[in-house]
Length: 241
Image (cartoon, rainbow, N blue to C red; front, side, top):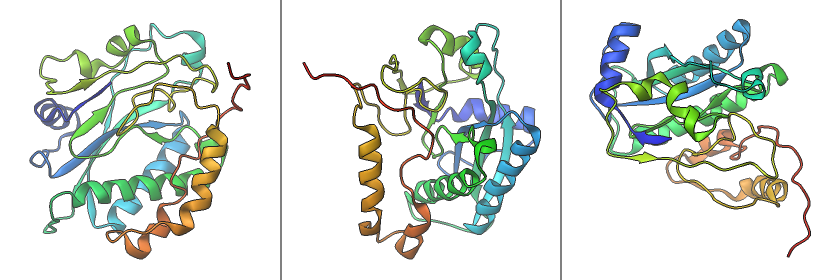
């Protein structure tokens, strides 16, 4: 489920559970993050994220352990269940950015941190940022539609209010189901087969040398690979009908 940023709910949760006060709506970004369940790997992932937060002139508002109830999960989902935390990021003290620029910096943060963490190998394969921006937030997983509400306790809170609730579910027919591959995605969803998934990923990778951006400039090079490095099983080959 993708919703609008539940500022009222998050303000109360961050103050009560983490002991920090949120900046005004629009002046911070929040997102849910999947971590490996190993405590050493979690600490390493957080260290990388926090290093890049400081490097990019942002500030860590806080990490919030996400309350979940996994009692209804099946054995496959339970075996691969990640550790969940919410990341909240604001601007460094005294820094201002033009409208829209914070979201671009949060995108940059997500890409550079995920790329560096992925270089650590399989131990860090479960690290995944479901979303990180100023206006929306994503709650998703290897769940049935009926399980989403019961699994994420945030969604059960009366103060969780949103002008938007986008729900999408699909049965994975040509890639193996996983927590990161669950829909919705951060900006849009698809509803169709991706039998050329590996080819499309490779083609995008080959075009990265041609990418240009007046905003990122030379920093664009550190954002690649643009597409996720998460391992995807080979697509099922089918005869066109």
